[in-house]
Length: 271
Image (cartoon, rainbow, N blue to C red):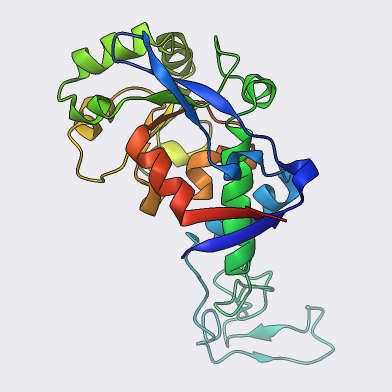
């Protein structure tokens, strides 16, 4: 979806950032699209994240007759017993406090467990989260190790041709981003609770987000096993990539092609 946003001139800030080669040297500079000048709306980002997060929840409920398939009846008064449904042998059934009885307030499949959000609001949240990636103060506040005063890190398109992890590691070290990946690796720990029995034993922090132009690029295989690293193309980019946990300011690498695609997908006008 192509979205056009109008900003007043006093809100427009033309940002010029350097373009880096694979060896960490500066190859030139590029002007960021105006979407990176959009105000950081933390409330909108949080709402969009909750919408995306709850969209994964699966509705669950109970059989309406669960715990009720018994023939018990109350014996009435003058037996010195609670007036709950009982079998002929005196065992209480059906009532919520009895063994095998129904639940008092069971989950229902028609319960609203998903936060809905408008399409334009979701797009605005993504634009706002992209703008947060260009603010070093917000990125540091999120916990990333940042050695740049101009963000996001823009890299030449040769980055997408990397094929093995050792090559990607050399590039990340040259760009001074490897320390943040080490930080994410040291944060990996065993989850508390029953989640570790359900396919999510380990949890850890997020580190670098790489935005590339093509979802079939070779660099995906080179980066996918690094701790906390996500690789995504502009057409698959969502708020969970840009603001994990609903907190904006993720440390981001963007290739030149991907930057051009983002600028065309989310167009900002001035008046």
